[in-house]
Length: 171
View (cartoon, rainbow, N blue to C red):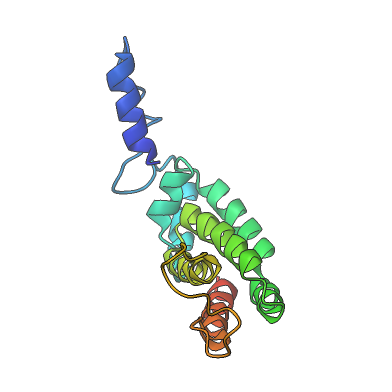
């Protein structure tokens, strides 16, 4: 949900009696209305983080730079060992847990504007989902007990997991 678009739609349909408060509305291009020099300084520091789309993160968090910093810290803390966790899931052949973890990571990273992490998590989620998908009757013969069953090799998973871990550590 894009807050600017939602707000505009609500104003249109609710036919507000007064002009919307301009200080509350965010600038779509800047990602946030800058209240003071300290906030601008914080935003400038955030822009130095490789892989972070500051405008997208600020838009999702209603322009609150301090909140973005706090949530980024929580994200790093929560996912700092995601590579180890995913490797254990892979070793246990638990593709469902990999799919769930990747989905959660994808959503969190998208909210914060961490596009490269979101893309990797999306790849991982799709890979695990395709392996979990049950073929419809008559689609394909059941090859689950065949040694040459077509699946994603563990090296494909490991490559994405290593990339994810590296991206998170670089924050």
